[in-house]
Length: 120
Image (tube, rainbow, N blue to C red):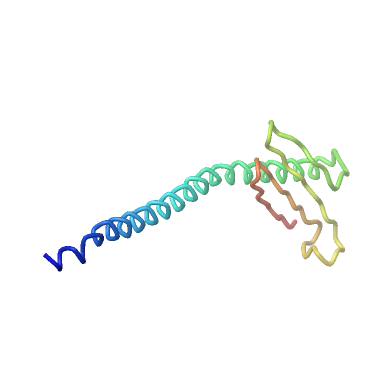
């Protein structure tokens, strides 16, 4: 009977320790899964941003080909939240190794931005 009286509270301590470990593991899994869900959502934003940057580069190439504009930096909004910014660097410039010009186009959607660099 004496041994039983000494170990009376050990089961409560073990339950608290096990519950703490399970709770900690559950919080860790929740944190990882919520971060993964956010990353997966931003992958779609990244694709939209890339296509916006591509649109800006294509528009600038077309304008330079048709010589309809001599603007070397402009911004355009394609749709709500989707935009691009294009900068043309003419030769000779130390930051451009091309024969004629370099085009830097940055597309953005929400908080994600993607860039394209063309040398012609």
